[in-house]
Length: 364
Image (cartoon, rainbow, N blue to C red; front, side, top):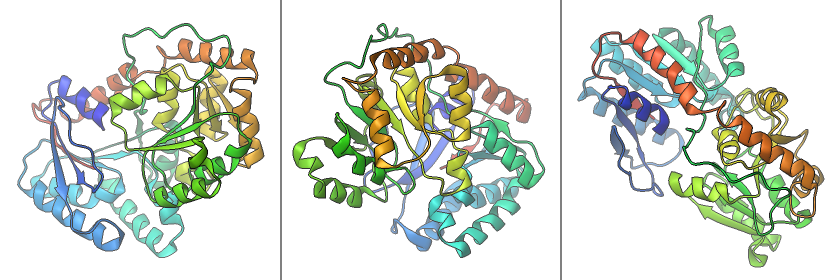
């Protein structure tokens, strides 16, 4: 959302990004757009969703905007209602297929409820876009309407990367960045670590934060220092940390269509840092890798499979393959950048609001 809001703000829109203040939220940093966080008494479960949506609606009722954008389905109802009450266009930004995320798929009654909300909301959006071509096709098939594609790709920095290493450099580490949630292959990755000749750094928190730390402790990975949990890391710090990683990991289980058709921003973050990566062999990643060859794809999450793939890209592994992936990432950086994606974003909003001077509030 930072990229989207910053691009809109630089284009002259007045943007307000609305989010939630969580127990572990980092302080808000200065941005070229306004920011507001809602505080909730409840932090999880059905009551949390009810409370957050009510608080969001009440807050938005006191705001004015030319358009209102909901980020994913869990904020869509209050944002749509505010747009309807004010007679302004409603925008739906689908970062994922919310009805198919593991936490929803595991509860059929909850999934049916969210599907009804999706079927109500999506046809009413004046503009809808998502993060990848596969999800856009799926949304289009489900709802009989077009979805534009704005990929969540890193902004290309002006800084030049050093030449690609001839082999995996010594002293580096394996990096995972993102939520510590179910379906991310993290339990399998920890199980593989005793067979892996390197150190793992995890940046992020989530529903599995405690259980993953417990698993790592039981395997002796914390005591040995082979696994380190960094918790939440600020974006600027994460970019610097990623530059020093040896390998990035992006692993998912096929526990729902949202994961299967995902195109995570970490894929592009690793690529922009020139870091080779090990990625699950799902359609969007396979399509990009067939074109740019920046990752080694794995067909499953068996510990032996992960260990073999990671050891290949660590010191003592296949140096030529490591160099090839690092070099290909450097060549792909200028072609896969936010500078390209934001042109599509700005075109979409210019078409939606040809005469507007103020862009709407975005619920997140």
